Amino acid sequence: MEKYVCDVCDYVYDPAVGDPDTGIAPGTSFEDLPDDWTCPVCGVTKDDFQVQK
Image (tube, rainbow, N blue to C red; front, side):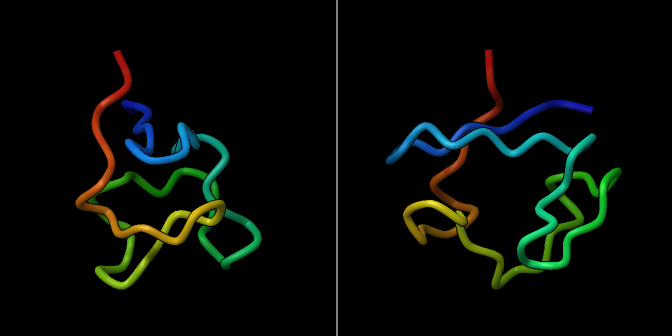
């Protein structure tokens, strides 16, 4: 699965890790994150993330 990086703060969402602080289980792809999920560091929406290169 691809990792996604926040355009604002460079936080990397890694599907292998998920986002345990917000209840997102390991193995959850970026596409499967809830529409209201936000960056746990700076609070921007999924629209502000890009595939990590």
